[in-house]
Image (cartoon, rainbow, N blue to C red):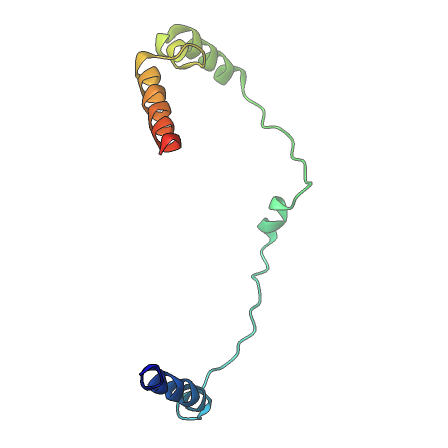
Length: 103
């Protein structure tokens, strides 16, 4: 009984390499040479290269300082105390991890 089931699979395993090797099954392909583009701006990205820091004008510095001190939203966005929403997300994540560990 088992021989009858495996006979077609055995025949296909012998027939498949012959079909794959036939010239009718293969398509002609051309091999092209892959040449990377030569771009002078790529040398700026080379590792180990140190670039001078960008200087900021005095007007821009004063504008940044006034924006930092005058805006109360920036102080709220700084790292430090967690909000109630963040604590809720942390507790939900811890509960999910605990359930997965118990399973």
